Image 1 (tube, rainbow over the protein chains, first blue to last red):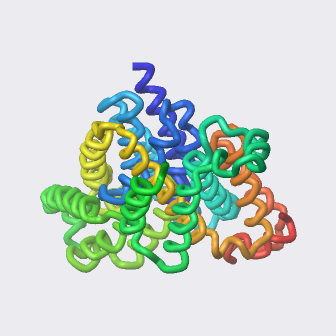
Image 2: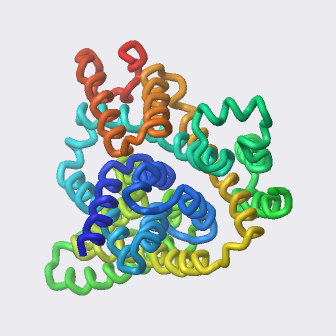
Length: 193
Length: 207
């Protein structure tokens, strides 16, 4: 029971500060992975699964992480945990709606959390990239000493290439995310040694 | 409008509305793949154009607030619309409709993915997919960041939160609370600002 309540609490806390929608909430979950017993790899898979499962990304994420943590009840408690703050916050705001919209305090808070959410999302992206591109247990020291001896031993060139090309395809050419993900999977299966 | 003032008719209307709310949000949740933000136009079509549950201005107000408030955008919208149309029961019905398809389908997907045998080839495919996932998230950050990168205060906050989370084991919860405090401090330190003006307009000097 303690296990489920902890899970509920972690996701409740995430919901309370989940400014900026699905990917922002995903990036907050990333910083809790240690407490949730989920690896960065599993977390990265979630992003791909999200593309083909309908519904809000945050609900999908809570269901997925909760299940990996402790099965069906885990996903239930995680989903309830992340949903409850929406009710508490929206119902409170509706009560003070006009005051809320004009409040300087509220405007100040939003001016601060919006950029922070962007930084967090970028960090989540690079945390995944770091995890797939660099081998396990890489430190700054081993990376740079290895880089001069044999660059291919300190990073996965295929994953780096897929990451860079996918980013270009999405940002410059507005490529379809599902197509990019499928191609990346095929490329990984064929090229990674 | 005047029908709602007659108490005898409100009961039945409320029950019909509650079911309808559940159905609207269930449909929106089942047929949108790109996250909750993509659900809003579908919800708007039903709530405003089809069933005329509230005026458009109110809905757009709710939709905008759903995005600025913390939490799940589609669920925030469900609580706003549900509460407005049919009270607390309406908020629960709309919320349940939003959550149910995502929860059930994700559970199925998770069990399926979890059961894939992890051979070496499968691991390679997954590594490729994960590389693309990183790109996808970066793309979302770039899209959101384009506007914010014009103000010094925002740039400082973006970089600070980025570095703190990527290189130190700090929970994002504290980063966001810190950013909220910083935004608040900057806002309140400039008493000359017109409260009606867009927030953070001149935040640059203080950052």
